[in-house]
Amino acid sequence: MESNYSKLYAGSFIVVQLITQNLEKMGISPIIKDETESARLAGFGTPTYGFQELYVHSSEKSKAEAIVATTLADF
Image (tube, rainbow, N blue to C red; front, side, top):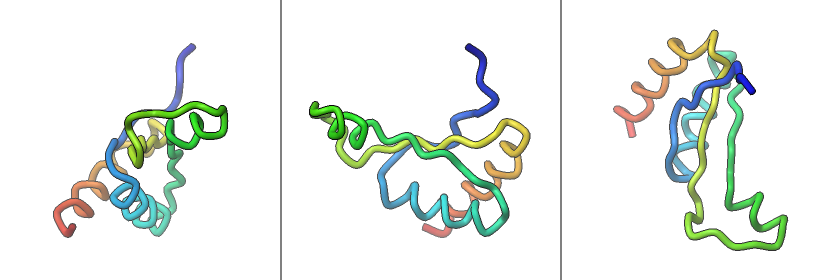
């Protein structure tokens, strides 16, 4: 199955939330994948607590990559 979304960043919950805020300020709505939360809801555990992946629509990827770079430089 082909997706119109691309992985933009993977890392800690705190950094992902900061990037998400900056993306939303610029009108980009990212999708956050949190396997820890999914596993918790299903009754399982996971060794990667606090690790999240951030996805954006492929049409917004280049603009989003610039925002991520700026955010990480300021962090």
